[in-house]
Image (cartoon, rainbow over all chains, first blue to last red; front, side):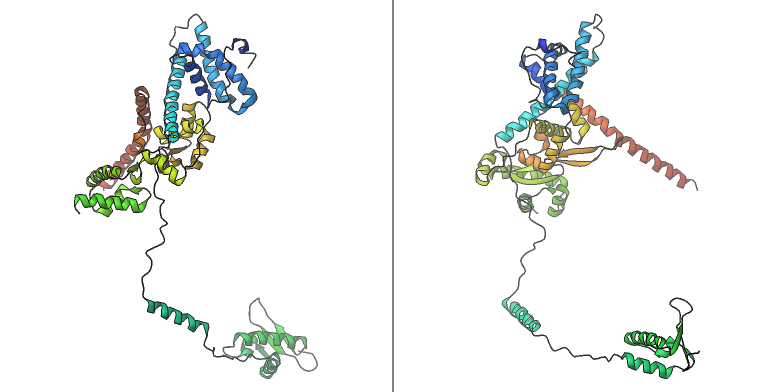
Length: 239
Length: 204
């Protein structure tokens, strides 16, 4: 950049791009500090200063450089046009930069207006919105409280629960029962009898496994989750 | 409900609500027309001024607030917050306030510099909020100011901002018309389709 714009020697007032909020802010400041209106002529007049300020930016805020360079290049185009002999062609670039700067100035002034209001403390206060949930406090009379207390007291002394005793068949008893019922080849279902309880099924299955281990029965289940066939073995261990 | 009663009822509703209440809701509660509500709002604004209060109009919603001129006094009572906005954030806020709904790219164009950090600050303060997406390529998010913006700067509405210079105002009006042309076209297409469907059903 320094190679293209040998602007350092042209610097009259040192300006740092740092405190400006953007390239248009800097450009506007340069034009206004010379008390110039915003025209193509005044923009050309401050081009060198703008470029010099951008150079300081390179070291301090490189992340802003791209945006400043866009304006720098537009300014340089203006400057170059003015130096060329046939610069009387419609100067659209100058017009658009002048317009952009005027538009920026309007909003910068609006921002200053807002800033002034804030500085003067001109603001409103509103009532904080209440949470929606809390409804009107429930109404009632003391007797209701008394009854509630009584209900609570009752809960503190729980009535004696009736003890429900359902006998669970023991493994030994189940083994005996199965041996008793087993004649020839039977299904597990038949051995359990009609409507077996869950403990009976569990004990029954355990009993079958014990009997099988003692080599008193052979078990057969042709398919997973299918019927379990139980076959009694005779005393000599042959089926 | 008599006219005077309606104004009082309106004041009571807005005081109790605290937050902005939609005009439609108010009209329904007061069982009056939109015009009657506007008249009641105008009268309430006058009466509220006597109590050091003002009405904030945020889009279609209305909110009761203390008058801006008593801001410094109330700050003494409640303790003022010292959240100061940077020049970049203030510029961005001004642009959003005038041009809303506005996209970040448009803010960047006006300021000539990337404004994402400033916009994030404003979003974090709750002064600016996303308003939806513009139906143009890329569907950029559009931003607008919040009720808190009016409150923090003591403005009865966004229209109370100082007017932009004439040339700029016409430029903005043109821009707005251009952006409105998009939904206008799509509406026309929809009605066109409807007409086509109508002719199809009419044929048998």
